[in-house]
Length: 449
Image 1 (cartoon, rainbow, N blue to C red):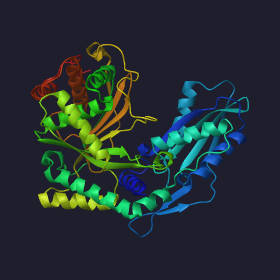
Image 2: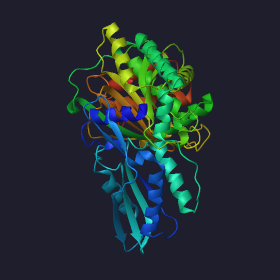
Image 3: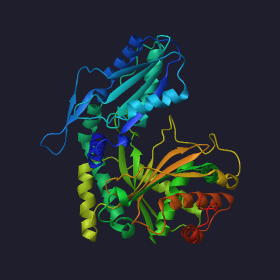
Image 4: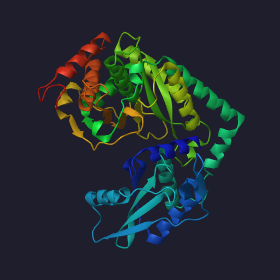
């Protein structure tokens, strides 16, 4: 699969044992179940989905071989409790299954920890390699786990990676692939150089990693979403890309967005890594933030519909397009909303956080994260949560936009949205906001908390 190959490339481009390539979940067991009966359900899930029985073995070829076993034994640890496990005990169990990296060439890409009280399994803690699952896949597995727990006998046959590969190799799949490459070429051919030129010598010590937890940002994003009839995620995307474009004096904003490419029939049942990149390209021609929000929504949808292609051929096309422009490859801005939203996209009227945004500014917390290098990324913003609280992370090469730290950039996103939710903001005011961000020094002020 194109998406699995892209994930394999990403895993091997990062440091060994990078924890971002392990996903974990906790499934409470609502009724008493024995260890063996619970394990039987897990075995049925593994039997249903080939990705959970697949190893990726690299030999002398340019791509790994996928080896699908008929049967596997999923590693299981059992932890017994005299009293029902506390939240702290559950969190500790998650850390235990999550902390050891998967060797995807040898290991079963799944491991378990059963939390047992009175000889009954009360929680199933699951960890899986990101090449075997994504967030959507975990939801598929969760639903099937509970269906089997409730006694469901017949579940619909899921799509397997081999089914998807058949589409990718078909004439229709190749046509989709070529259209996607052409869309990348067109976007890269005119995107501003400031958002494409890499900083040489990228290393962990040059990377600034920060997270923000903000009630104010969440309230503002939902308020603007309701007013403009878009989703809160589009509002945050618009604020991020607008600040990037203005900060680099660009005529357009260009980012590499990561999408869950599940818009084709049957892909909602596929358990596998199924995330691919697409260009997000939007001109900075709107006169107000509201106008830019709508342009951002159109650009995001255009990218989503052009996100399916072979990642190796995409890499060659990107390098060739940039070579013609005299730009070396390897310097990109990424955006990844990792939240899983079952059934539909987040809705501007769904669980909107109450209260004025500005009143919540004092509650904002920022904290430093361990620095890590993301291949080819000089800017990588992730949206982890967007409900009553917004949680965003930013990994940024300090030499890219050196006048704005990662922390201040995230605070600028918050400030832009707070101001824009109170009244539509002329785009000419965004440059002044950035000046305020760069010059802010007082702890406890609008941009330093």
